[in-house]
Image (cartoon, rainbow, N blue to C red):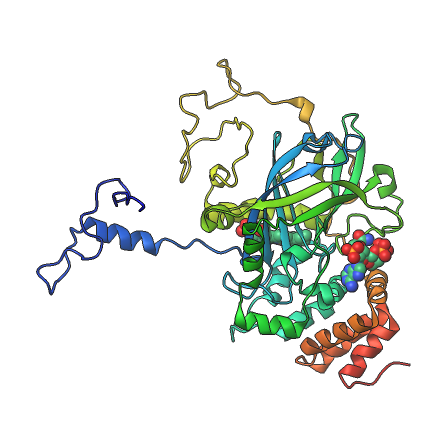
Amino acid sequence: MVENKKLTTATGTPVHDNQNSMTAGSRGPTLLQDIHLVEKLAHFNRERIPERVVHAKGSGAHGYFEVTNDMTQYTKAKFLSDRGLRTPLFIRFSTVAGEKGSADTERDPRGFAVKFYTEEGNYDIVGNNTPIFFIRDAIKFPDFIHTQKRNPATNLKDPVAVWDFWSLSPESLHQVTYLMGDRGIPATWRNMNGYGSHTFKWVNAKGEVFFVKYHFKTDQGIKNMTSEEAAKIAGIDPDYHTRDLYAAIEDGDFPSWTLYVQIMPEAEAYSYHIDPFDVTKVWPHADYPLIEVGKMVLNKNPENYFAEVEQAAFSPGNFVPGIEASPDKMLQGRLFAYNDAHRYRLTGNYQLLPINRAKNEVHNYQRDGVMRFDSNGGGSVNYEPNSFGGPKESPANSPSPFEVSGVAASVPYDSDDHYSQAGALYRLMSEDEKERLVQNIVGGLKQVPEEIQQRQIGHFYKADHDYGERVAKALGMAVKA
Ligand code: NDP
Ligand code: HEM
């Protein structure tokens, strides 16, 4: 028999009755002096925090990363410096557009956000299960997400908005093709790859710069779900992916991924025929082959969903020495957006929450603020410069200096080739997958006005004539010669 602990109020005093409110006699009314009742109801009213504005539905797990190939040649990041070195981590998988209770099996990119608790501070890779994205400038993100969320009048998902935006933003074509293909609905989170998507900067101890792309390849193998299977499962078990991950880890069937990088020496970035900072493009493997880095293993479920998963705050701006931002315009916008979202969602001291707290020592002059629930620096000096042994900056950890040039203005990208890589992706699909791709596209496109259909089909034709022709035919429209 488990011995019951004494029930107390939040201030620790014993609760005398947790089933009957204090009332005037058996028929009431209820007395305001029932402090326990008031506290219970008031706390309950405050149980919800804002859900993430995107990626609201998700789940997470703890694990570790182990280096199999040391990366000192390319980066001075300590957690990548020695074969066999293990770093604890937390990962959160998610869908993008749905609300917190939405179905896991929607066709949507999957978030793949990893927080490495390194000895030099937290490093986050906040990626997706796709190596590319729909847009390439942060200024378009709120508009894009509005089209993925609900219509302001009907509160329904809105295919017209979705295809209107995509057809008017042809840089989305590569990712749209990816999303509508088989990998648009993974069978489980364990059966999909993860990508950093953006290009990041690595700097080694000599100060040499390399640009890098991350690829986490699933060791479970890629497996996907058809639209029909997904729709059925959404009705039966909307938490299917959440359940699968939890059960696998509980059963000791620990999922793992092998991390690879593509490495581009700095000088090549300015002569390569593809803009390496354009997140709608991949670097073909033939040009930049995958180099193994290590293995990520997930071996522990969260003990408390809210504390560990809902309160987790990932940021593409959480870097460690040896890893820095690239000039990618989307990434630059994200460097602002995440920490701002966390301050709104979790308040300004969100880094102190156990799941977000660095596992190395943190020393700074930040004090006070809402929910400062640690010792707040105690009596230590709270200003700098000071003569009392306060923490000091370390110039050795300065980011690598880089040159900038150009006229400051709202400048578009200098390449408009939205089609070559979308076409390459189409051509590597099997005949069956091409058919499913077209059916998935038509499922959405048939619900939108003809003007939008025509505009979008024009993009498919430019990617690959056969692609355009198949979609046109499936929609019952005239095909181009
Ligand atoms: P490669 O043939 O060297 O690589 C093709 C890549 O595509 C592999 O990473 C493979 O992933 C992935 N892939 C295979 N089938 C599908 C599919 N049905 N849907 C989505 N991805 C798939 O060619 P390139 O590097 O020249 O790239 C060609 C095209 O492949 C690109 O335009 C891009 O759309 C796509 N791709 C490229 C990636 C890259 O980083 N270069 C990464 C992912 C996709 P896996 O090995 O896991 O099966
Ligand atoms: C979550 C903004 C592009 C992956 C979020 C959140 C915001 C946001 C505000 C919610 C954060 C929170 O409340 O904790 C943006 C903006 C983007 C952008 C402004 C473009 C400029 C991308 C891209 C990727 C991505 C390109 C992937 C490559 C994710 C993931 C999460 C997320 C995985 C969920 C993190 C978690 O699990 O907590 N994004 N995003 N986002 N975003 Fe983005």
